[in-house]
Length: 450
Image (cartoon, rainbow, N blue to C red; front, side, top):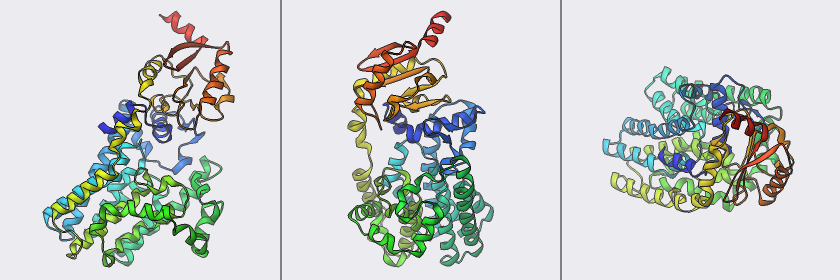
């Protein structure tokens, strides 16, 4: 939480995804329609992640984006507990089980995800591990609770739930648990993608465009995956995919063996989705797309160790390898490199934000948006914004030196020229090429109140 909060304070968090989740959660807590203004749709049209209604209860106590950082950090940390108990349940020594919990915490994706904005699906990570533990202990209520929690976090997780159900049913011989997960996963996938999301976003699932070569709808893509496998084979065997698999498996390669890879059945949907797309962000250990595969990688390692195999079985060796992988792949180095690239306008940006007094609409750079999303209207200074209607905004904040994601100096300069020639707006702050324009009506009412 400390690292993610520091990143946020340095104006390195982004509109997508922290601003997205923060605005939706805030609006729910205020009883307003949770339309993410810079996206244009109700948040349920994104990933049907209705868990935000629960998170909004925290915002009712006090609306603060740091709640999201806290929830994310706690969820990721809690995953170490079911990892420990799964290892013990499989017959590992307590020292080995403790080492597995540490291995989990040192997996680079855990740190990187905790650092990168907020994503609701992090809550599903301990829930997946807990669901498997519940199935192995024959705890039906715990299992059902974990499944509901997972499905509340993101529509695509339903595919992983279904795959986990298939694995439990066929390979773990847990008929009730496997059947329940398989049925729930398929049912929620259809409900979310065919009913809920289109109801809030008429164009349907946004990520479909990443798989346009397979079709223009979720069902068409699924059909072609099953009936025309030749369409995807050429996309799987590529150098970027080889690099991705090396990143994904290398932190745990010491504990994987060919005879004990069956738990990876649960990771198949995630791997396929990430391998067949050209979208590079799905092929790294920085973003959230590989998260659903991690529980099953850990289960495969536990299975290997339980069989007395693997390169390392001594806890110290397991931890040392994991520490080396963490040092190599965790992005803590960003704090003294890319996160300081805009430090020269940090103070000016803070001072400009401090002058925004109302809950009226704002037009701001993407990196500033998460600091101002507790309002119904936030739009981004991105390409196309130079022609936007300025009347809906009380404030326009521009950073000429660091325009931000999706923007350019040309966009900022055009907006700057427009605002300077718009009598309705007045320059209220200027420092280090950071500009804040305020509607004159807002400015004058503020002066009168003083």
